[in-house]
View 1 (tube, chains in turn cyan, yellow):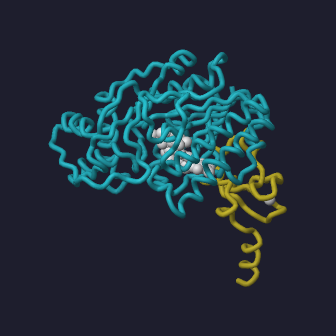
View 2 (cartoon, rainbow over the protein chains, first blue to last red):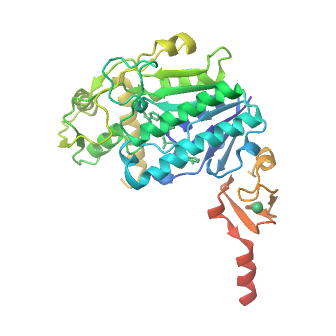
View 3 (tube, rainbow over the protein chains, first blue to last red):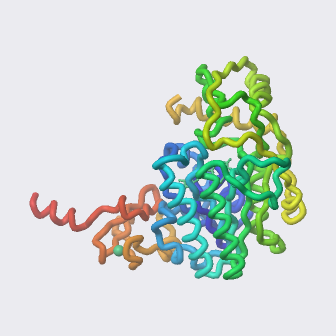
Length: 320
Length: 65
Ligand SMILES: NC(=O)c1ccc[n+]([C@@H]2O[C@H](COP(=O)([O-])OP(=O)(O)OC[C@H]3O[C@@H](n4cnc5c(N)ncnc54)[C@H](O)[C@@H]3O)[C@@H](O)[C@H]2O)c1
Ligand SMILES: [Zn+2]
């Protein structure tokens, strides 16, 4: 089949592209290499797929390019391109979130509709929930995002639903819960923490460390995302994709000390505006419809991320 | 290691949606209407109007030189 992945050079998009190619499908990858973090990371993410004859990369921006020409013969679209990051979404920067996450999503949906695409998978986020009172978070819980980023991702979800109900474009929104593993974005907590330790710097912990997250390993995310695109009987709608367990940042740091075999003493800083207190996913809907079952426990996944960061540190690519 | 034919077929000028022509050295895609050359770097077509090279300017430049 012919498929397209937006945001293909990013953390999740590059892993997904590898999976789709390994299943023998063609991938048109779209990415404009936003400067949110350096292009070197993203080019490195693409090392494997660029060698594959079934992969083509377009460096273009979903807000401006003619997507109808690109999606002409495409069956499945995985729409992952977005301006990520909760903390950067306040103030003037919001323009990027509004352009890329809302307008960009509408443009992808519109082109998908015109081209008669058979399935569109949208990378949504646990950030749409905000601070809820009841755990685990269910897809039916009323979403009340606490960051402009969460608002933009929720708007994208609503647009997906509109195209599904008004135009019969089958859309599936996956609410990813904090994703980690090799290639994790350099602005994310695990990456920053591990990098700091490897450089003998002091990592910064926001808040008192009691905040909990449902961390999800990249391979589990890719598995769910792949299935949402390919399974014929996957019902359009919204699905939580979590890692299956919830753990506090303090406990993560303990685990990191074990894995890296050295003491870690972070400096504590104020909790950041837009950060939620806790996340925990009810994944029963994804289990029932997509056969989703997370396989990687935090200790193993974290070890993989540490190994990856060590390997790129040795390569000297990122200014280590 | 040339740019894929499939990819050439689906690409249009991001500005005017018009057809593009591959340069002889296969390192760019030209829109004659907009007088722009979209570079192909390491086989990756850069379809961003901001990054395109104006052919007009080139012509002006070489005139004055
Ligand atoms: N990483 C997580 O924990 C997490 C959690 C929830 C949801 N998500 C969602 O998953 C998706 C992928 O996230 P990621 O962590 O891989 O981020 P990432 O920043 O690594 O990848 C996103 C990619 O999209 C590209 N992009 C952004 N705007 C674009 C545009 N207008 N046109 C073309 N390309 C554009 C960027 O250059 C980048 O390579 C995003 O939609 C994000 O909101 C991620
Ligand atoms: Zn043109």
